[in-house]
Image 1 (cartoon, rainbow, N blue to C red):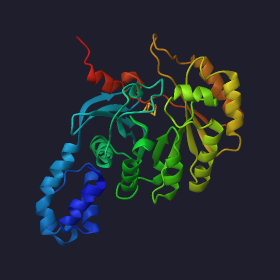
Image 2 (tube, rainbow, N blue to C red):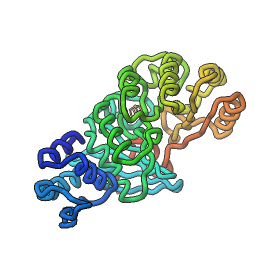
Image 3 (cartoon, rainbow, N blue to C red):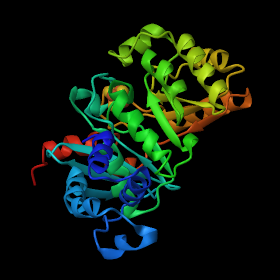
Length: 338
Ligand code: SF4
């Protein structure tokens, strides 16, 4: 179901925009749709046909998604395994400070070499109503004031659904536009469409290296942007919206943590309205890629920070639970033997 379908169903029942807004806000706030008689009162009025149609709509919305597992982390986050109406599983993560990370696709076609989700390829798109349902479910657990589109999937590959969800969350959902964060490996359609939106989200770009050839190896099916070109496009959007671009950089020992890389980062970030999020890879001893030592991470951060690059170290939320994005789903697909 798309959000447009929900609005169309309501309009066919005779709901005016004011009625649609009231119903949508109740859903977005994680409340069960009230189908009782209070809608006959003037302040809550809904036309009779809408009232009669609401139980079926409420059932449809309830069936969109449900939480099948909760995995609280020590850092105040919690990974949620969310079952969609057809049994497909995606992950949402409740982040500290009222944030929520949502999934936009089941699987992903980009195939980043360090990502569990990328290993499955794309299985299906997540509809706009299913994206919003992840927020509605999370709001039953706790308050959500920021939504990042950084879970499973590449939002640019499901652009219409993601933009529809962003538009609703930034209006009826009551979320500030800069607290909606569209995360992408970089796609020409993103740079065309985002500036045209009424609700313009903040932008996070996956950089991961300053070297175009290495980037093509790490993100095999991402558009072949040279990192400098990608950052130039990001800068244009940052200046147009007034929000800095967040550059995501997964730190991989011996791959993209050399001093030469860090010096090139310094060059690229000069004068940019940007934040660099360093995400040390969350590795297991036998993994192909490893996390740099704590000492090296501190060195890199101090080096960049002291030279004017706003650098933050971000650990994958809830990583003490089950590692990175997609690992809960992978485990649910292949239950461990006891
Ligand atoms: Fe897709 Fe993101 Fe994983 Fe890359 S890191 S494969 S874009 S989900």
